[in-house]
Image (tube, rainbow, N blue to C red; front, side):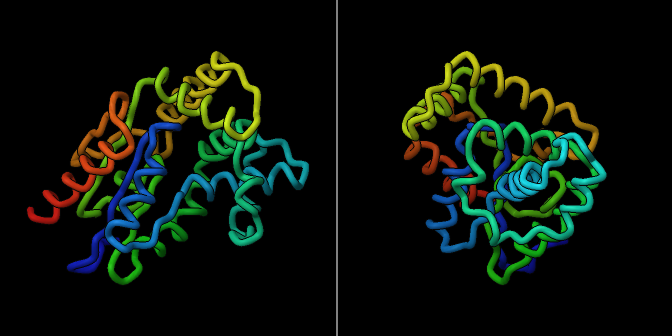
Length: 215
């Protein structure tokens, strides 16, 4: 689905804890666009699976739920945390789940004026014709440190080593899945945030988007 002429669709992809979610929100605020964290959709499917008592690896149950869950029925606090993140990574590897969420994401991207979407396959699958594509990354150690700080701030006492192992496991699963693997689109600009502050990342991203708009 191609964006209409003049619409600004910004695809922000990257691995877990790379900073893509924060960046997507800041870009959306800067350009006055709606923003969708597509990872929350997979977390919703995973939460629905867990709430219903299904095995998180039950692809048939996930396929059934993906077409019927209500996006407004999940308070965000129930979609955060290590357990649900790991479960979301499992269901996200299921082709039927990805296919079931495809239309929802593309409808969001097709809004008049444009939109900002962040996820794992926005630039490669959901919005391959997006005018601006960024692939946000950082070293596993930096991403684990960020997640560790975030969880400690919520009062969750989780060992850094456990978070690092989880991030590496999710990276391997997301990059190795057969359907829509995590990878940078050929025309995406790589933005390594390992040594950058949030403000530096935002400034760099706006510069990338402006150069793409001008081109």
